Image 1 (cartoon, rainbow, N blue to C red):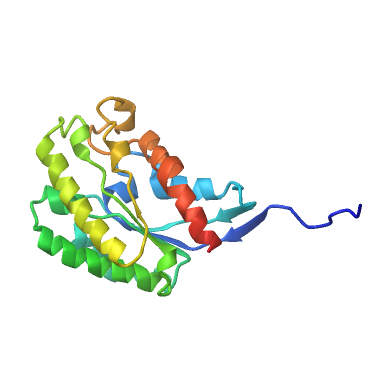
Image 2 (cartoon, helix red, strand yellow; image 1 turned 90 degrees about the vertical axis):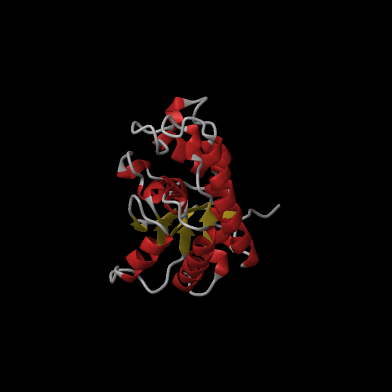
Length: 217
């Protein structure tokens, strides 16, 4: 029987990744290495079942307290960004909710940001993904307040409706965040933001698999 000389060695590709967001993307109250974009980059650097690994240092446009309008302005202020990326993520909305801004305004701004993300992805929607907003009611700060949960649900529902309309993946990490009261280690020392442990759960349970599929397409 002839030998199979097919090259099965793992391959490494370099990808350009842009993460757009707010405190949840920049990793407020955790180290830079514990932010979920950094953890995603670490996960992609390991060889997956596809036999590939990916090297990337994410470009992050995010700041604690940013609303959708702040993010729009923040993108415009960044002259150092590439014209095109291999992968673009968007997670934004909690500060619109926290500041009492309208859902109508959020929908308008969110769709504008989603279109901006698509442009950064070279108009390839397959390279874009949206991450849901976590539910901070399940932290010491939120104290289980059901009104917070309901408002977060409404903002996430609006984001998902718009995202689905563009046939872009909406990755729902919110249920993981709702384990924060039962498992305090999922909450950062500030008693409000996710911990590195929670961000790692996002990557391992929800984000990495979908991103790998995107990179294979």
